[in-house]
Image 1 (spheres, rainbow, N blue to C red):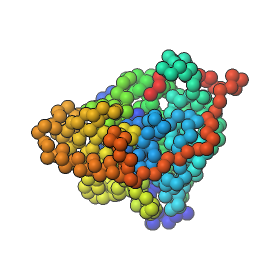
Image 2: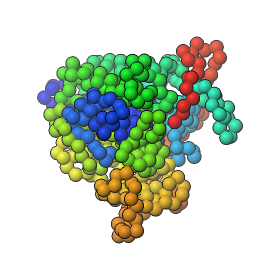
Image 3: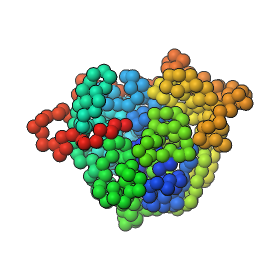
Image 4: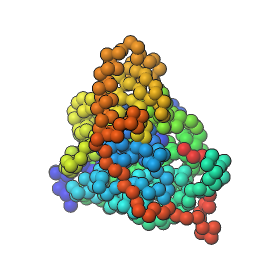
Amino acid sequence: MTDPSDRRPNIVLINCDDLGYGDLGCYGSTANRTPAIDALAGRGIRFDSFYMASPVCSPSRAAMLTGCYPPRIGFGSLDGIPVLFPGQDLGLPASEVTIADVLRAAGYRTQMIGKWHVGDQPGFLPTDHGFDHYLGLPYSNDMGRQVPMDAPADGVEPYYLPPLPLLLDDDVIEQQPDQAGLTERYVTEAVRFLRDARDDPFFLYLAHMYVHVPIYVQERFARQSTNGPYGAAVESIDWSTSVIVRELEQLGLTDDTIVIFTSDNGSRGVDGGSNAPLRGAKTTTWEGGMRVPFIVSWPGRIAPGQATGEVATAMDLLPTLAGLGGAEVPADRTIDGRDLSAVLLDGGPSPHEVFLYYWMDDLEAVRVGRWKLHLAKHGTERVELYDLDADPGERDDVLAAHPDVVAELMVHVEQARSSLGDALTGEPGSDRRPIGRAPHPVPLTTYDPDHPYYLAEYDLSDRG
């Protein structure tokens, strides 16, 4: 058992799927009830300028885990598409080092629960990347069998996706699981892990499937929601947060545990989701696609009731948590994240001079301080300048009034292109590492009409 006097902090990282900047009460939502998450923010610090490194899930999650911009680690264009699909031969290679890798090497017990989505082939799964155990879906919850949709333009049949697998460590333990019950199963597994690991430093990564479509929720959340299925899913996330926070209290671990809450990218902006007051949504490099909620609580170390506008990114988690946990950051490669400890503990300034907005391998925008310069949108040149301090909704293009600012930001653009590359200009990038490739990829599941599926197909056709 670790002596409490020199115990390193436990870490609980809660990552949502497609939850928007404006979906929580502490970020201004009046549509969704989130008392547990709001209380978490009240006990710690809320970031108002926190960014994921991509507006879609696979590159966003790979960047968070490794501390690197997606193009740095080969997660820009995934053979021409923005996210990974079941049975694809691509994934996070063993050569990349994750948060879980560095913490486990420092003596932490590690557990991952929920959505992974950085590769489903052998060598790419959570247990290959520093997690002792895993329970969850290896990719998005819409990547299973659903009711027929219009066939894609290329003529592929609507049932082109195999049954949705639920994994325990590396094994498929269920196919087409009841999605309405998954969050409760995840929370049960999280509680089991917290109780089992209570005497050692631990890292729990809980990656919700909510609020990605299709949205299936327990009836109790559906009944009480005032924002339809979306609001019910948000309130389910809030409930799960309350369970974890209470369990930490019951175990006497509250003061010893850093709890982090965030989302992998912005909301789709439809069906009840909100990125207000920001412009844009998931898949875009407007603020609404990449600026997301970020809350950190650590009683006794992080002063309560704080809000900061300092720029921070999901890539910062690896160096920050490594530093706080007594782990080593890889010194043999470029890490784009920066240590946020001074911001968290002392109210210090952002360690970032510049933040880059990539869509796949296209550099679409850059932020330096209050200024954000747009360069393109999904392959089309679009040069605009916004003052994010005065205009976070990116409504007033001030490009013509500030040629000096544009010139200053273009210096950073050229530096980024040189290092990370830019498909729009043909720059290859001098400091990029290859993505992993499986030699003989196969889907984790194959449809079998004789299999006793709980749900042979999901009755919602939503895909996102």
